[in-house]
Each structure stands twice: as structure tokens, then as C-alpha cells.
Image (cartoon, rainbow, N blue to C red; front, side, top):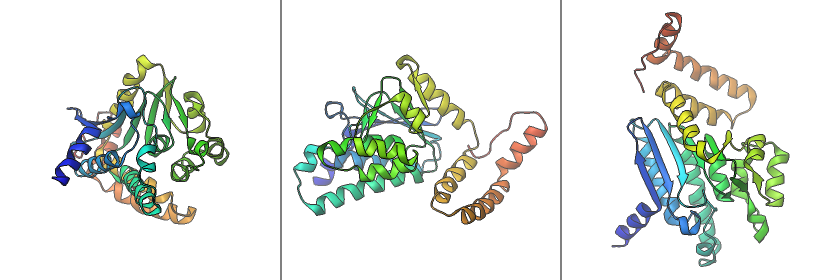
Length: 268
């Protein structure tokens, strides 16, 4: 019964939708709580990413939120109801595993941000491969305002933003606009609300039209080389790019370019 209740809670927290064009949409579904990342929601996201990683029909993943907010970070009420260091270590480790899984799945992930993204919600945006937001969206790593430095969101921020921009957000906890988020490197585009879905679809479609084999290999190599020194990164990337050249799709793509025709990907 406990397992059934857990699965029910997870299914209610995330609304998945698979489109025929290979796009998987994951909607955070706790609108009354501004889509705060409860344990059940973290488990639901982890389960979704684990399944998507094995689903070759999925080309691109889009993460959005129901209600007014994209995601307001961790569920503070749930956290205060469990005041122990063991629980907090468990919670933040769970969140870290989910964020890591999100980057390790072969499919690119796009954050569709229609409202505020704060603390771990801002981390979710920074952790996505691509992000599009409405001009009215705001972003903050606001934990410092309640005496809690956003250390785990800082991991994602430090890998997206310049050091001074990251520290400005982490030290002050103040909101930045979508326009500033573009300038900081947190998101790719800030658009009018009426244009959000079209821009996300345009970006997803541009990615989905490419060779799935090349995209997944490229995403894997990109994140792994970030952890290396320059010489090691170049050596690793050179070997992986040579492997990529042996893909059927690479040969097809180059032949199509030379022949001035559209490539036909084998591995979509």
C-alpha cells in the first residue's frame, strides 16, 4: 500500500505528454505550491528521466510548470517538518541525483519558463541544456533571504554564469529579470508570453531534426569534458569526435552536404 501511495503521489506531481514528433513534455504539477520540489516531485522527475533515457522515440524533453510559477524551489514546509541533518542530506542528495540524471539522459532538455524560478527552481533552469522564458519571468537563488545559502543551486549557476554574476545572485538572493537572465547566460531567449510556445517548439524542432546519435553523443561529451583540464578535454573530445565520424549519420550528412541534398538520418 505504501508503494502504491508513493507511485500515486509521484504520478500526480508530474504530468508527462509524448507528442508524435518525438517531443516529451514534463509538467510540474503542484500549482498551489508554486511547483515546489517536494520529495514526491523529485522522485517523479527521477523516474521520468530514468524512463526517458531508455526511450529512443523521445528526441527532446521540455520541462514546464502548471499554474503561475515555473518552480519555487524546495518545499520549505516539508523541510521544516523534518528537522534533522540526515533528512536534509538525504533530500539534497536526492535532488543532486535528479539534476545529474537530467544532464546524463541522451536527449536535450529545454526549460519552458512561464513564471518565477527560485532557488532549486532556478537550479532546474540552469541545469537544463536550453531554456526559454517569458519576458515577465524572474529568477533568484533566494535562500540567503531565509539564512540558507543556495549551495546546490550554486553548482548549476557556476557552470552557466560568470563568477561575479553567479555570486551576485547567490549573495543577494534578489530577483533578476528575464532580460538579465539572457545577459547572464542563464537562459537562451526571453520572449513575449504569446510567443513562448512557438519559440520553445522552434528550438525543440531544430534539435529534433538533427541526428539523434550525434546529439546524444555530443551532449555526453560536452558535460564530461567540462570536468577536465584543457589538454585532457581536447584529447578526450578528439577521440570521441573520431568515433562520431564513424557513425552512419556522419557519413550520410557529409555526403548529403556534398551532394546538395537533405540528409536522411538512420538514428533519429
